[in-house]
Amino acid sequence: MIKKYKDLLDKKDLSEVDSDTGLIIDFEERRQKDKVILIPSESICPKAVREALGSRFTNIYAEGYPALRMNQGEEKELLDFEYQLSYYRRYGNRRFYKGCEYADFIESLARRRIAKCFATDRTRAEDIFVNIQPLSGAAANNSVYEAFCEPRDTIMGMALTVGGHLTHGSKFNRSGKRYDIVSYGVDSKTERLNYERIEKLALRYKPKMLIAGYTSYPWAPDWRRFREIADKCGALLFADIAHPAGLVIAGFYPTPIGYADVITFTTHKTICGPRAAVILTTDREKAKKIESSVFPGEQGGPHVNKFAAIAVAFKIAQTRQYRHLQKRIVENCKVLASALQNEGLKLAYGGTNTHLLVIDLRKIKGRNGYPLKGEPAARILDLAGIVTNKNTIPGDEATTLASGIRLGTPWVTQREFGVLEMKKLAKVIAAILTNIKPFSYIGLTGEIPRGKIDFEILQRAKEDVRKIIEDIR
Ligand code: DSN
Image 1 (tube, rainbow, N blue to C red):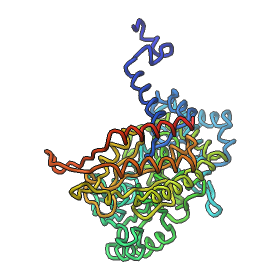
Image 2 (image 1 turned 90 degrees about the vertical axis):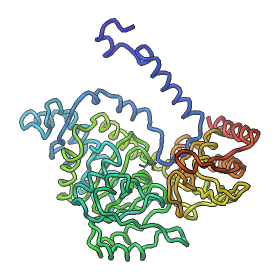
Image 3 (image 1 turned 60 degrees about the vertical axis):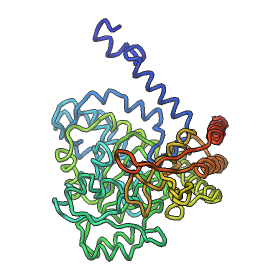
Image 4 (image 1 turned 30 degrees about the horizontal axis):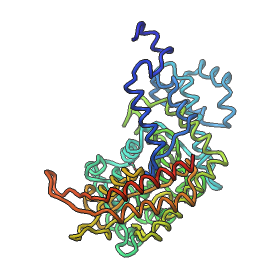
């Protein structure tokens, strides 16, 4: 019972104020502990990052950007609070509201840490311009288009069905409605990027922007080759590294810095931070365009509590332990891939050199020859305690009838799963998938793919998953 509103502010815990929400959060915590989560775009946000996310920075508005001065010099100069605040008292800042003096610190700190993480031998941190205001990946990508393209300009990116992202021109997304989209796919034989074909297509359609970067294509692109193609057709090169950004920082995925004109990524996938997104460029003029395209172009007030969480995440990203984690993520994925292949499963795109892989389910067939689809496969795996997502693969046309499931290793690697666990998981996954009897029926929305599995087999798989988790604790 709430007696005084004021007590809510500092005294009452969630369990006292809203036990229903508290209970749902407890259930979710339990789920995350009891299941093996293999969604490649998910990871565990560390406690310290969540603490910053729940800080009082959530209370304020901070439309605008920090003072330019705060992005120059060493981190310790930024953190010279007396010096910076005396400047602020004298000259004010670039925010629309007062009360943002500490927001300036936290946004600048996060930006510097990101720049430091992405600096290379050839590109200094000072030359990387960072925008951390996009609320998430889709907003970041849309801000990039708005910054550099006019409606009906041609944009070229990979098709969603073979690994591109929704915002790379899907007809269901604003990108696909607002711009003329040319999509590239993979080579039908190798299921890999075919740079000659991509180049031919680019020369034919002369896109204003060429996008590279993927959500389910499991191989790293050749940035140099993409740069060449962009230069030949006069396009801006946009690298969307939402998925592998953590691997990039740690050196286990080639960096687009030095090749791409603009780069976006989210901070909650391999970065293992809060749900947010970042835009990078090494060109001052482009950085200005991006700034105004994000705010006021795309968004109003940014989420300052996220800035704090991002700052913490990128402090962690500079540690040896983080580099080791990223290395293990890739190693685990490689082991999982070959273990699945040894169990007789087929991988779409022939394998992986990143944190994700996709299983091609088409050769698992029911009595009447109906192939296993991603939806029933992912559902049954989930019942057994393994969380994945259905995914289209080359040859698929509709997401509802996707023939693949996508798996990734960030989350389980954070939980310290290693080679042994990858092999055990591959066995359970294969035992489940190869024992599903696929079928379909026609429902109100058309073909509905389903699958059945013997109860005993499912129970055994559940027990195996439980044991894998138990052993790791
Ligand atoms: N939905 C994300 C993913 O899972 O890859 C991309 O935005």
